[in-house]
Every structure is written in structure tokens, then in C-alpha cells.
Length: 86
Image (tube, rainbow, N blue to C red; front, top):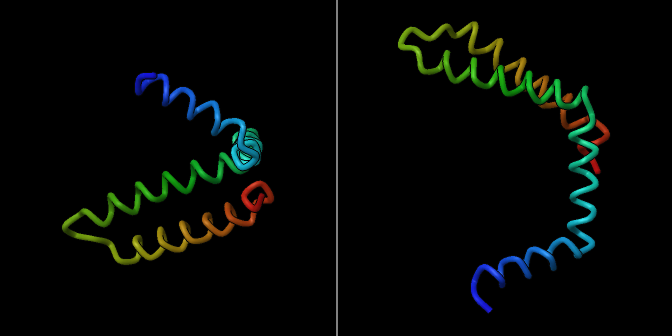
């Protein structure tokens, strides 16, 4: 048995594990939750905006503070989603 065959066998065994089934079910629920996906996309966009603002030589501290608050709020909304607690 070569390395590739062993890796395929390992993959099959992982997929048969109960923990993988639970993970996969949760992933599917998250992926299908449009509200959650919208929040995640908004969070990622705000994070990019924050990084962009932080890399500027003339940082706007007010804007940085606003973005930080928005990111924290979005994160809280994401983590309170029922699909994130499964």
C-alpha cells in the first residue's frame, strides 16, 4: 500500500467517524443559513476595512474605533446564531 492509498483509506475512516458526521451536519446548517452567511460576509468586509485603515500612515482613530465596534457587534451576532452553537 502506497502513501496515496493510505491517505484515501484514512479519509474513508475519518468520514465514518461519528464526530465527522456531527461536524458535517453543522457545516451544512451553517452553509444553508443565509442570515448567518450575510453576517459572516459583513464581518469579513469590516475586517478588511479595519486592516486597510490600520495600514494608513494617517490613521483616523474615530474610524478605527467605529470599525472595531462594528466588528465586535457583528461577531456577537454571528456567535449568537443558533447554527453556531451546534
